[in-house]
Every structure is written in C-alpha cells, then in structure tokens.
Length: 119
Image (cartoon, rainbow, N blue to C red; front, side, top):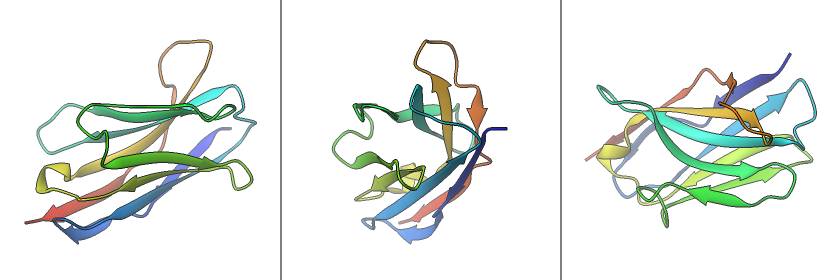
C-alpha cells in the first residue's frame, strides 16, 4: 500500500522561505516520478515540479522556476520542495503525488499540507 504524507506547511510572511516534505512508503519508487502540485482557493490544481526518483532529473512549471527547488533523499524515502521568496499568491494546499515512469496519470496522492502566505 503506497502512502504519501506531506508535512511542513504553515503560515508565513511574504518573502519567507518554507520547505515541504513528502514521506513515501509502501514500495520501491525507483521506477516512479514524484511530483508536487498545489490548489489555491477557487483555483484548479496546478503542477509545480517533478523529479525522477531513480535518476534525480527534475522539471518545473514556469510559475515557480527559480523560486522553488525539488529534491529527494533516497535513504529517507522523502521528497522535498524548497520554496523561496514566497508570495501571497502561493497560498494553497500543496500535494505530493507519484506515478510510474512508464506513463499514465499520477495515481498516488498525499493528503495535502496548507501553506498560507500573508502580505
């Protein structure tokens, strides 16, 4: 049973930094892509970044490129999202997710962690 558990959200001021964590368990993820998404109030879910668990290559949405950094620690089976220079528009519930590198949709999701950025 795959389980993804996010943590690290909270209330911060604009310009601050925050690091989210996603603890993964239940199987070996070497053949998976792990991603971060968010959904702001009244908005659709938005892709932020992904990382190939095995090789470590990454990709980012233009909206966060240069401010957010995705990383993983294979020894801890944990993925991270370092967020810098946070803005009020970054306020959202942040989710981690996983899918096979073979293709298809993200089929494993965490429960989400709230990030609120005050101006």
